[in-house]
Amino acid sequence: AQSVTQLGSHVSVSEGALVLLRCNYSSSVPPYLFWYVQYPNQGLQLLLKYTSAATLVKGINGFEAEFKKSETSFHLTKPSAHMSDAAEYFCAVSTTGGGNKLTFGTGTQLKVEL
Amino acid sequence: EPEVTQTPSHQVTQMGQEVILRCVPISNHLYFYWYRQILGQKVEFLVSFYNNEISEKSEIFDDQFSVERPDGSNFTLKIRSTKLEDSAMYFCASKSDRGSTDTQYFGPGTRLTVL
Image (cartoon, rainbow over all chains, first blue to last red):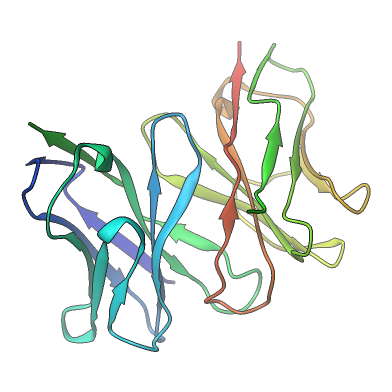
């Protein structure tokens, strides 16, 4: 079965600092990976996705993620944090076949401090 | 930009009562999903639906749950007899194509509180 693990349930950074949110996957087949963001009291919004076309994926709001097969990782980064980035971030993997459900990680709450 | 909508935003019910959560997926989408998120926990898959039938369901989706697409626009989740542990945020999602890489678009969620 495919799964993702997010290290660090809470991450705190200063405004302007690098954001690094970690996600490792487990999959016996090439995975399709997603990062979603959830702002307070809102639904899930897609930040970016890896579909095997390119290992470095750029998303919205200045976020990007790099797929590293050797490390089974898909970490999310942003060079300079903004206060508006404060939210919960979920890594997810899409299963092949069936209904293509998403299996989510436990989420990382990002706090941005002045 | 098209979006998935859900109603109501918050539903409070008594244990043992039936609830129906409603979703309007994006109009040209063909694949529909329900997920739930218990407070403080991760988002969990419940069920996927395509061509008027369930394509996959999780262990959570037992006989108390059912889904329906009663017309060309709505997609509903019914919980027949609610339990305290059904209290959660329920998200509907939809996508247009069959592929694993296609984006699922999520609605804002319905917060269900079972008393």
